[in-house]
Amino acid sequence: KSLCPHTPALSPVLCPLCEVFITMATTGTFAILRHGERLDYVMREAGTPWTPTAERPFDTPLTETGREQGRLAGVRIKELLEEKQLPLPTAAFTSPMLRCAETLSAVLTNFPAVTDMRIEHGLTESCNLDWYRSWALPSSDSTWGGPRGVKEEPTDPRAFTSATEMLGTPELLNSKETVTTPVSPWTSTQSVSQYTYANPETRAAQFSRLRAAAESLAVPGATVVCCSHGGPCTHLFEELTGQDWTVAGECGFTAISLYKWTRGEGGEF
Image 1 (cartoon, rainbow, N blue to C red):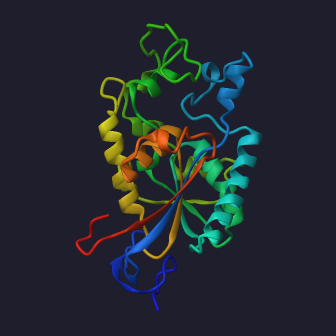
Image 2 (spheres, rainbow, N blue to C red; image 1 turned 180 degrees about the horizontal axis):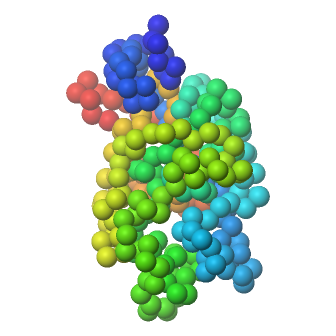
Image 3 (tube, rainbow, N blue to C red; image 1 turned 90 degrees about the vertical axis):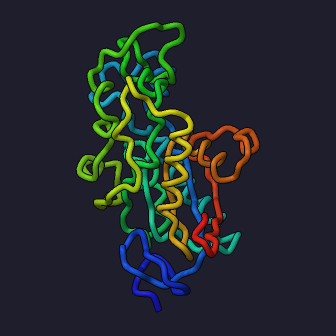
């Protein structure tokens, strides 16, 4: 029997969570979802933008509705896994952004066996120009790409520092009352440290980052649940399936995807 708590025993592989050799299967499952309803979007539509006065304008929390969406998404993920006779989650990873940690924390109320979650930078928001312009311009109001017709340049100096500086940490997320599942230290498999407003992430780079994160976080014989963002969830679907995003449709709040993966004899994913 394997000593690793995350998977059953079958064939020797290094567990990415324990960093010890264990015996396990060559297939596994991902449950991947987008975060819930964002507070900044709701306030923008109400005519009182959240972004201009926020201390961390790139890191909106959820609304109460968003947190309830997370809980219900957990219910649905459990139903889907049981319907398909797949194992319930034994590990959880979140984007560093608060809205994802809040969502995943709510999801995990349905899975008491998962007692903590880890931050993975590979799951973070797109670090492209549209993201920077959604929060760093004088008139930014969370609109992707900035308010329509605006030709401004960023005035928030953080837009010109490493994107890593904007990401949440275990200490920050654990200080939030709405993150009820402990966030444990974890060395991310991917990095976005090279990106700034002057050197944004390209579409190809994001596809590559997401695939590498998925391959690195895969736990054979088990289900891993991950929470990310609309663009990354959509691009991950395209990268893993080779299909256009329109096949799955728009990735709404707490949209869920289940992926069953296989690793070949040569290690190919």
